[in-house]
Length: 407
Image 1: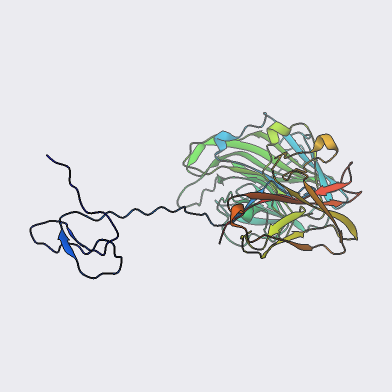
Image 2: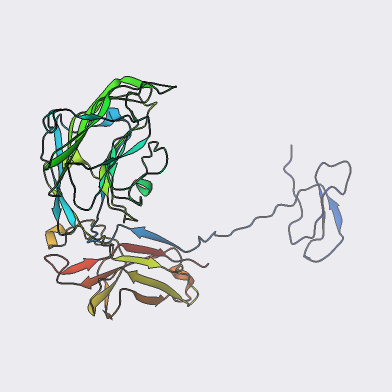
């Protein structure tokens, strides 16, 4: 069999012009515009060489430092994942409008505060108001008690099914203390499921307790939990957990935490068992981290790449530094430099000083109209000199990596 030897050159072509060939062409050698030529049984082959250039894009690296939170949470995916030690005590100690939370406090035996506890007639997912008689808690007329383990200063208003989302639990309208799972206390009149265990209230001039005593989880009456909320007239609050009954994955999990009324800056989840016994601080007011954001992408067309630093502390002016780097050191915690929680996400190749008079600093970097920059990344970050921030007196933002492109 002899290899084909078609005529080479520029051609104008159409296909299937000869019925006896499944695929063929009309060729006009030497011309790219001719509309006619000799019939040929050879298939035209077109070769296209091109490079696909990616679009410009931004990547956020790390987070800014000196976030301070009014709330906290830990969510266990199921109650079987609960890992705090037996007989755990967690206490909220009032502190300048917020709390210091430490690992202290003990379960008060049932009947030790009030000889005859009040057994609540509370249904699955229901909330009841228990108005204080002999007990008290600063600013609260009583306790709104949810069957699912929450105590608040206001009514949940609807049947409160378990919802593990921090976006929900950290942003309720009322102040809430959480030991929140799908608990189902016993209620003889429940037409669907009688539950197990009771919720009991005891009051004295010093402390009011709300105890979940051997309470089952919905549809798991043998998975029993015993824990107690203690509300002191001094403003101290203690959660004392004897045990959380495990259950299988058909039931949702457990949230332990606290949030004041109104929207909160949602903190990262805590690992309470890993942190034990170190106390932590809940502020009176949320402090948002120094945050750097890009308003557009770094396109290589000679236009500016717009950046904005927000959450600069009030009370300026402050000296600030724009950091530009060709690499990302990716150091998430500069505690060894006296900047705990602050990170470094741009190498210190170019530093540009500025004065921040307000809580926002807008600036830009012109990206040259130079195609050779396509695919390259420039890393940026902002720092604020604030003597109140930490030992080093420096606040750092998150970083942004801007990868340049033609569009």
